[in-house]
Length: 209
Image (cartoon, rainbow, N blue to C red):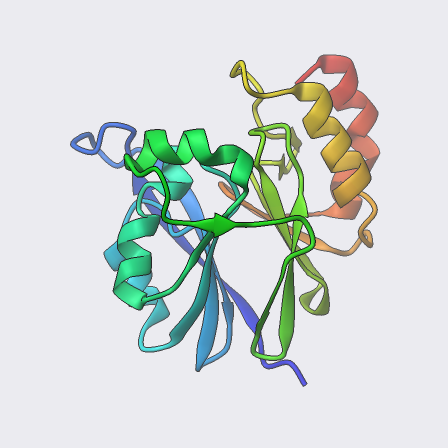
């Protein structure tokens, strides 16, 4: 029997580490009172550590390599002695964000992580970045979508390594196949459901973003 729950922490930071904390991110903590998996420990490693409390961190999962999601991950992972997992195609973004050439294990499509009687399943959802990954938690009726899907549309694809067509395919083929009542917990802002977003796919395609 699963004892898992999903907890949300909002942290804030800046692309300039010395700048004001203007950019908010969702940090997702999945588990129970003993063990957790932390997804995207953004901006403030100490704040994430406080939210975790004394619980064991089984793994640190990154939905993609952008600085706001990954820059604080090495510091946090070192604090809790947990491995970091990231889609391998985002290595170049990891290097830009952290200055490290390694330090994570590949987060492969279909990889599974067990915590508190619940399975977290990695689903490759490229487009926002080449290595973007969503995390399905079927037992809890949820998916952690990173910056792939938000209320009102897919994540931004303004960079030369991004692709609108690819993120649309990821959303259509990997996320919109989930049950309509699946709760979508994105990397920023409020949550939504698959059923609330699915009817708008053609609108998003027509507008081109």
